Length: 157
Ligand SMILES: [Fe+2]
Image 1 (cartoon, protein in one colour):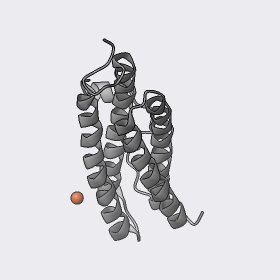
Image 2 (image 1 turned 180 degrees about the vertical axis):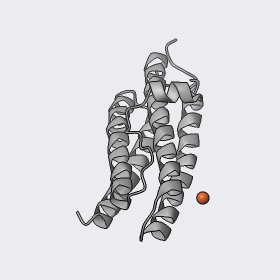
Image 3 (image 1 turned 60 degrees about the vertical axis):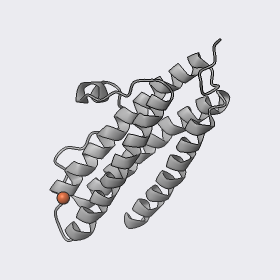
């Protein structure tokens, strides 16, 4: 029997778990980028961006937990060490960024990278008939696309 208790193909679920661990790793880097921006931002937009980055990292924390628990739901093991996250991520790492435009650009570029990963997972979960993962990716994509629009508006683009 190749079906899991959820009625999903076990091998396909295992592949999705690997991809979700990639997304989890990238989200952790994105999260840590946001903490750095929240701490290091300087200039006339400090109060606005300091709060905005906190809002984004607080939201990411919830999403990180949701992704990890989706992995567990699919009977996988979520990665949880910094070493694994660094090895499995592709989002740009921001260090010592205090300039407002540079900071917002980093968030946009990080989200753009997350979107690519989520779309790849969405294609796989669609083929695997995994509606739970599919719906989760859809929700992430819709929200992140909107956030990119707002951040780009802030950038005057
Ligand atoms: Fe703070």
